[in-house]
Image (cartoon, rainbow, N blue to C red; front, side, top):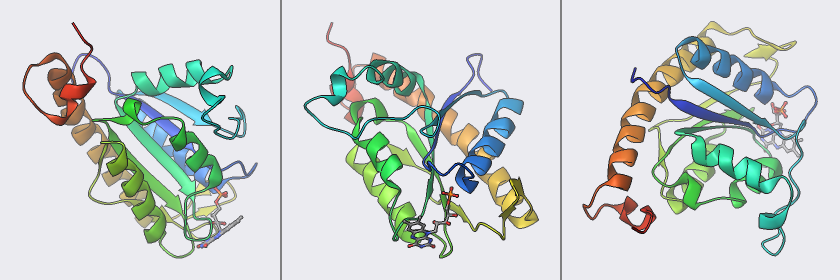
Length: 199
Ligand SMILES: Cc1cc2nc3c(=O)[nH]c(=O)nc-3n(C[C@H](O)[C@H](O)[C@H](O)COP(=O)(O)O)c2cc1C
């Protein structure tokens, strides 16, 4: 672990009051905090984000605070339910507000689905690619009433998948964050060169 803690922004992409996605995001956040990460959680049930409108979104009262939180993050942890084989509208709405802020960062994805959520994971990977973000080479999915019951994670196999994911998030998140910082301050022609502040 480096001296500066790895900063993780977790996004709970369900507005369901009893969301299982939120249960899992909060569980992972506790694990990451216990291993020295600095956690921030965006929960649209508690802090609604207006529907993205390119004409007004960047002047909306909630935007600049959220932008700072995204900018400060080294890793973006995205949790979404599977809605019609796709990401939730709340998650898409969040993602549509940003792209430059994601460039060079690691996306880690968790999907609540009855069908393994593969198409949902693929869509999050597509967004990552469009925004020049990295992803882990796998996503984690789980099923409500099987892996999570009454607000608790009850499946040992799911817990161990999450343990693997949090370990990989920390290790690869830190490696990529270090390289991102070096590239933003360097002079070599990598993909982050265009994100350097002009002298
Ligand atoms: C509008 C809607 C569409 C859904 N579509 C799917 C689907 O295509 N496949 C699936 O496995 N589950 C689907 N579900 C079920 C949710 O993904 C599932 O209940 C999930 O655990 C909800 O997560 P949450 O409690 O965090 O909101 C859908 C649920 C809703 C409300």
